[in-house]
Length: 249
Ligand code: PGA
Image (tube, rainbow, N blue to C red):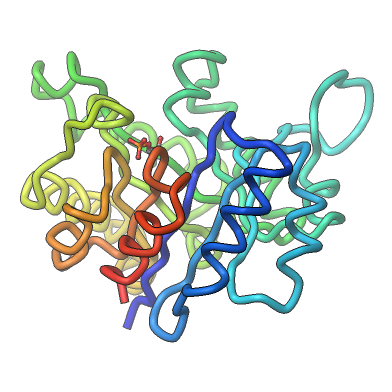
C-alpha cells in the first residue's frame, strides 16, 4: 500500500546538455504506473528542468535548501523559491551536507520544517558512519537523527515526508548494505516512529540509499520495509536508473 519512490540524487554533476540527454533517455522509457520517480538536481538547473518536466511523469526535487524564509543570507536558496520554480521535493540532511557542511540535527530539523512550510516534501536522510556501525551505535545514531525532527516538527509532519536510510559507509563506495542489514534499520525506523503514531509509522515511505544499482535494486526493494531508493551515481545513467525504477514497481 506504500507506493514506491525512486529518487535520483545527481549531486554536483551535469550540464544543460548532459541533463537534457539524461532526461530524454528517462522520459522515453520510464514507467510510473507503480512507482514514483524523482530527480534531485543542482539548484541552477531546477527551474529549467521543472519546466521541461511539466505534465511529465518524473518529479523534480532540490538537494538542499536554506532554513530561513528570506533575507540577508547570501548564496542561499529558500523553500519558497524552490516551490516557485516548480520543485516538489527536497533532500534534507544528506550525509554530505551533514559531514562536509556541518549541518547538525537541529539545523536539519529547521530545514525540514522550512520545506514543509512551503508545501515541499522533505526527504529526510539518516544513517550512521562506518565507525558508528562498528561501535554498535547504528540504532542510537538513527534514533537521535529522527528524534530531533520529531521533537521540532512533530510526528504528524511525517504524513508529508519521506525518510531515506543511507548508511554513510555505503554511499558512493560500491559497498551496499545487504538487504537484511538495510531491512533491520528500516524496521527500526518504523519502530521509532510507531512509539508516537503507529499508523504514520506504517504509512511513511522509507527509501534505502547507498550504492544502489540495477544489479542489487530488486533484492533491496523486495524487503518488507524498503519502499524504494535514493540513488546517487547510478542515477546519472538513464538505462541504469530505469532498471532501478523498474525494480521498484
Ligand atoms: P550512491 O549515492 O548511490 O552513489 O551511493 C547515494 C546518495 O548519496 O544519495
